[in-house]
Image 1: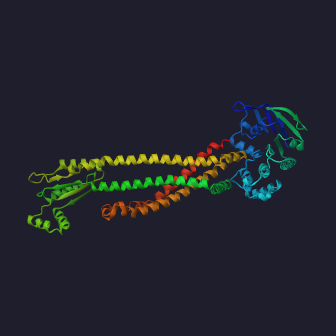
Image 2 (image 1 turned 90 degrees about the vertical axis):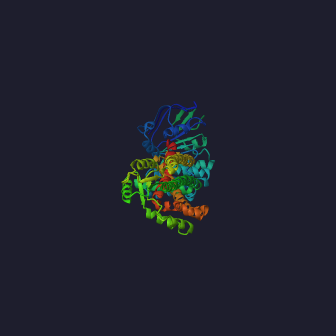
Image 3 (image 1 turned 30 degrees about the vertical axis):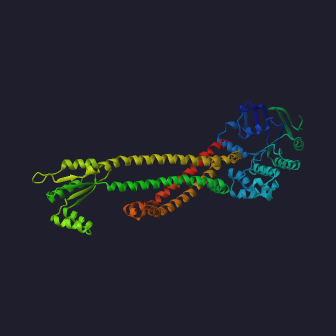
Length: 226
Length: 318
């Protein structure tokens, strides 16, 4: 479903983020990408949603090369991939409801669908009571759950979560992991990056370890070993 | 689907406008100032045009005929003058009319009236008062009159005097000054308009800059450019509409307030002589309300909308 083929990325300031990274992700897989900070995990995610371009190699989603898509197709791709950012990236001027509704509006859903699905997904991530608050009135864990709700509300084929637990305490971390596993069980492919050993151990499943921009381990039933 | 998107864009634009509070206020202030400068230019132009028209209308040529010239010849000549393409108005004043006018003017002055009686006969020549269409045309008309100058049966020219030479200086100067003033006004207007556009554009760019993270998030969630940019443009148009309304109200207040202000400044005496200047703004405002409304609102909406549209472009490349 997702194919990284000899992907390299060197930033303009000569920082090498990725070198010859190749792996693929099958539908309904739960893949955890682990590695220390600066290993290139975030770059991998950014390249998949065409937020940035690789300097070498190709990234394909199904049969399409992500970086040969036109703007309209990139929009479509992004609506099929729900993204959870480490820094949440909620829209500060919109309420929680509107933040979620926006993703659905962007995907062209009807008002009726939005009215039905938004409260539902917010219940799912257990934030239904703060639906009319603004992001700044929420805690970090709550914001991250809203970010997950936004990523999954359009029922995307893939959810990518970049260090979603990076700023959270253990309780919230466990909660986020539980939600992601549940999404995966419902049939969504999940790509999770983390440097948190506890997270890897709870998730189980396939673990890809990267270090200094290279894949050093791809384990079907992995543990976090460095 | 398109209708739904359109509705959502409009709604989001209004909500953003409202929630942006202070930024929206700042944009309205800046656009209002820009529109006021546009309105000020329009008013200044109207004032200038009225003033010039008045000055132009006070410039004229008087042709005085000899006392012996037969009236039939004079009337024929004056009809000829009226047909000249450069002549706007030519008024014939007969000897009797001239006398009557003089008497009416000095009827309360016994000394002058007595002197007039002692003369016994009518000392006033017949005359034609000529107004040209453009100030620059007086020289040509005066030339024509001098060359044409018909003669009576005795071979004496019927025109005794053309007072063009007396007015020549002021007429020539006006002919040169008026186009310069008009051109200068246009240049000032263009410079002011450019400054206004730059200031408004930069303000809206700053507002868009504060929303750059939101724009990139919207793009990363998969929103199309139209969907991201639309509400910004709607907000920009709202700035323009509100600023336009404020500007029109301020211009109306100024136009009607200026009547009394000018009257008070100039004093009633002066005002009587320059009555045209007293209600120049209010009458201009009333008669050109539709045009003013179009220009001010149109400028506001275009300034706000286009600035937002252009300002958003930079942040859409995500």
